Image (cartoon, rainbow, N blue to C red; front, side, top):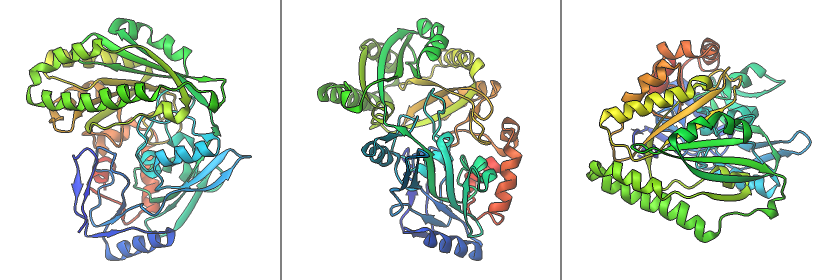
Length: 434
């Protein structure tokens, strides 16, 4: 029997049944069977969540036959796609249509359903997450009903199901607001810690999208700003093929991966190697269509914890995390990523009702992440942090409920759409309760 394992290798499962449904009717039949048998069912994606949020306990559905764009409405500027479509594929198809999403994260291997359901996000803009760009969806509920939700039809379902954790149903289609294809210009600049933090608020105010990366055991940061250009897609100035291969494929993936294999065996080398490699960073500027600037290849497999803290507390939380790392004796190879997001109105979004700053912490897949994440999670919780649903955390329903004003509303909708808990698994029982 085919098993399931996530990308980072942290979680695995051995389902009793595996199916590749070709259409909604097949999904309905699988749900109805699971309900009758009193078993459970999960539609998996590409496994890019670091948690067991999509781990199947009995029946595993795979979206291998459920990809592609279904409809384009140029008057409303929306695109509807099958929920099993990979974000990378949607980006390329939208580019061919002269269209683009407003924002996205830096990995594009997830299915749309998985990325939306876990609140996957980018940085800055007027909407940071993919979920905040969703204006319609269709799902199969735990009773086998096919439900459409838009801003005018079942709007209460749309409001809650845009970050649904896979707990409300199997998403079959998603409708996104889109924009004419646009060009971003990226500036990457090495900075000292104090310079990067002192100028952070002004940088965020001055640019459309801002990322920062701090290299542990050093005083060095890399900042990245992305801004829209008034330029046509055929007027871009991307990195040369050689520079892209050298920087993003060779150095950032192959060399970095090799260094991790070395430092996994000899952790004492990490501080000096971080110092050396961070000093090799150089400024670069390039432009390209949006999705090619937002996303980048990730050849080194890692494990990640990410928290959203209130924007006003974000840099203080970062400083406390650095102090804890410096005092801990831990040796960390991966940079810490800092991003920001505007508030949204999605019940279980990590940015629900507040502007947020995201802090993301990584380890190599072969390194035990528990001590590192356990060191920092209490700091992030003390700042009213909310964990990314698809990344490692230890939170439970009891302490998550107070963190989300819409938590009770979400649970009520779950009772309505999945009364028999067809879509439950151990992760959802932990974060939502029974």
